[in-house]
Length: 311
Image (tube, rainbow, N blue to C red; front, side, top):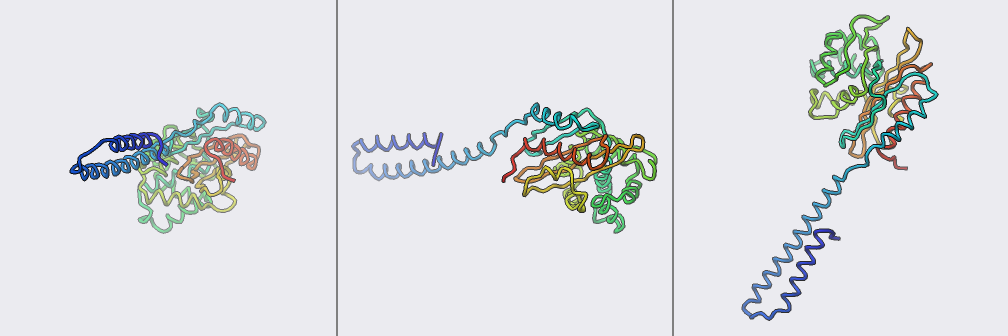
């Protein structure tokens, strides 16, 4: 079916053909008219095709529904009203640019989610294929099983807090600084304060060809984040629709000073031509299970307004 401008064009051409049929034409000009008529029909077909292609492009570029920020905010306020502690969250559709922020001014700790930046800092310095086997092994278990000792070794390899902060700046992070020194039995990467904006910038750098990290290195990080072990694959994965892929790194840390838990989930939900960067940070849960339920509940309540899951 031809619609819009294409339909109008065809009507005009048909009208011209009817007018031509009413005109008496000398026999010697009939061949010329036939040739003209063929040209008219070719032009009609070509114009219709161009118009359809233009219509398809317009339909493809039709703007998506705006994110209902007030509605999501009220929904989250109700959900979190009887849950202890603080929560900050952000979701961004990396294709359309649509985004939602919840309490973006909060600066909460990364816990083990900082291991993603440790790995990205490592790969900025040395491509994966050129890393020694034991270093690659440390990188794998640091992400897939959240091994703390492996993170400590790679923390030293990237230059500690200074190297961590330098990498953060390369990726455009503004609120994330490495903390020097030792914290209990670990280096202090787990108590790095960050913002959800920074975490979304970092996740975006894993999906963007304009990232300081080359494509092969980005794929390596995402492969590891997409194969975390059973029991650590909670978090934003709870908000993924059937058929979507969740690549994530979670963090959980009990604060010595308060006995309360910081629970974090960051990563990407990918499917149907979209990549959604997701970050939910929380502090103050009485136990880790409560913290996990909180970040999963927040992720679900935001994502439902970015797209609908099919039954």
